[in-house]
Length: 259
Image (tube, rainbow, N blue to C red; front, side, top):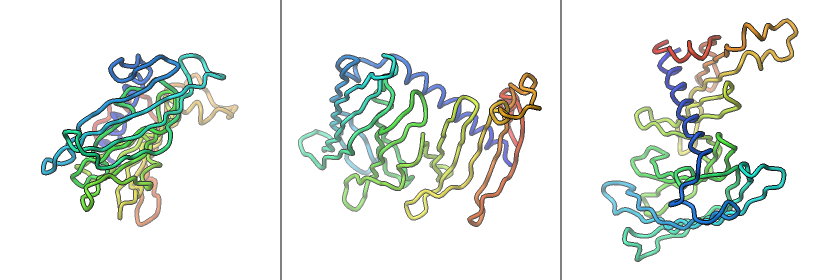
């Protein structure tokens, strides 16, 4: 197993934790208007899909409502109705209107959390995704709208919607995902698109030894509380094959540079 893979997955973890910190921070006034009880959103953003094409102007409209039953004020549950009006760069012509129901989760959000313009399917043209579900800090899920070169419009893609915390890597032609089950329990996976559908390439899991052995009476929690078990698996010829398993501390994992 390549340690560079281990290191890349650890770097992804740091990014996720950093973003989580932003999500839990103060909502930016220029992004959201309204009070904690009602966050309405109405703005425009210009996106260059490809240098050979004229940019698009997105008019993004969202209205949120909050249910505080059973939640503290900082953990309000929200549902968000949204729509995307896709126009030419000057905003004089409407090309299409897109919407995908509601998004739900724990707040607050910022615009950068909700709307992402990037080349998701790695075909040289920017697409966009919109937040539809999130926990308090991690595991966001999205609706995906891919740019269709044949029609010059954006088309919703349902094959990608199960990807959590996606990060396209154009050099490797793969999409990395990160699914957190807690600070020391997570799964980092890589997918390659085959005929437009994501196929698993490899994945790494991290599990706290304390949690793994929670009901083992012979387990010494004091001596093992700082250790995690890491597993790296690859998909070869349709079979999932374990490549490497290792037990180490966070510090040891952080120090790895090659494997």
